[in-house]
Structure formats: structure tokens, C-alpha cells
Image: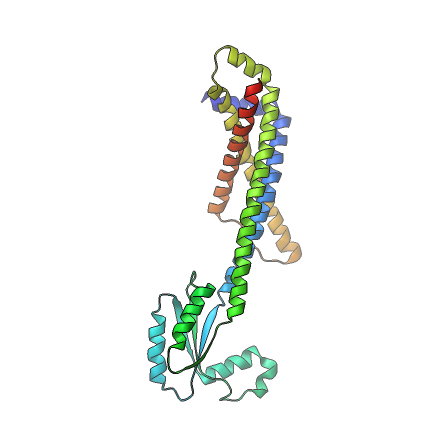
Length: 282
């Protein structure tokens, strides 16, 4: 393919400029990827906290075990419910002693009531869904009280929404910076080859024919910058784990592929903007 060959040849003609372009793009995408890595780990941390969301329905004293068992089976069939655990007074006492060991001597057998602990399915742990399921549990006659940490769940999802919005805004900002940087590097390549472009126009080359090698060059630079940015992000993650003893997760292969594709698109966009603007003046 002539355009691809021309784009690859351009790398050899100005190796220093090409390396500088790829490195600049890589650092721009590295900032974007590093923020994405932080956002990913924040999301994973919130998901781990979210797994602890549960509704606890306290059972009135002297409620027949058959009634509780039947209600437990019925609640387990709710579309939002993942699992229902029946906790007896003995179980509640043992759990309290285990979780609050320093106060285990103050607990008595009938101090804590039995309960139904309801775990919700992923995607059904938002405040509105939890509140709706809690209201259903309150409808059972043997339920004395229902607790689920309403304020805690609301704050958790508020933090999750804020993190999502901030991630989207800053991600777009970093992508915009990357487009500008790639456009600037392509502009230098266009100016360096202005004489060649003028000759091509004199022999009848169309704007599309002239643009194509630059667009391919921008895409290649975006991909190479993306590969280098992924490598630097991985090194940064390893450094965090080693020196701060902070457990992190890295991008999945799918996210990494999307990152490389995004680098190619950003390179293509930066090249298109730059070459379109500067061809008018050549």
C-alpha cells in the first residue's frame, strides 16, 4: 500500500522527530492511562465495599421457625435478592462475640434477636432498590425492625457517581490534550515536507492522496504511544504495590486493546485536524 509505505518511510527520514512525537504522545496518553488506572482501582474498591451492602430484618421473639423458613424462601425469590441467611439468636450471639471480642463477656443469650440477612444481587444495591426491598420486608408481621444503613449506602453511591463524572470529565480533558499534542507533531511533519507536498500538487495529487500518509502516520504514532503508555502505567502500578504496599488491579486485555484503539483514533483525529488546516497554506 503506497500510503502506508510513505508513512513508514517518513519515520526513517526524520527519526529524531518521530521518536520525539511518539514519546510526547506516550506521556500524554500515560497521564490519561494513569488517571484511568486510578479510576479503575477506585471503582474496584467501591465494588468491594458495595458487596457488604445487606438488609437485616430483625425477627420478633417466639416467632415459629416454620414461619421464618417459609418467609425466607419467599424473600429469596425476589428478583433483587441474591441470598437470604437466617440468623438465630445463638448465631447472632456468636457473631457479636467474634466481631466485638473485647465486649464478649457482656453479651447474653437473649440479648440479640434473630434476623434474616438479605444479600442483594450486583446492580441492585443502589439506595432506591435497597429501600424498596426493605419496605417489602417491613410488610411481614413477624419483622420487628429493618436496618440497612440508609445514610451509608447513599453516601457510597454519591461517591461512586462523583468519581464517575470526574473520571469522564478529566478523561475527555486528557484526550483533548493528546489530540492537540499529536496535531502539533503532525504539523511539524507537514512543514518539514512542505516542498514535497507542493511538488505533489503540481503533478496533480489530490488532497485526499496527500492526507492519507499523514493520517496513517498519526495513527501509527498513536498506537506506538499507546503501547509505551501502557508499559509506563504497568511500571507505575508495580511501583505502587512494591513501595506503598497498596494492592492494585491493572487493565484487562480488553481495556488495553481499547486503549490502543483509542490511541490510534486520537492520532487519526490529531492528524486530520492538523493536515486539514495546514494544507490550505501550502
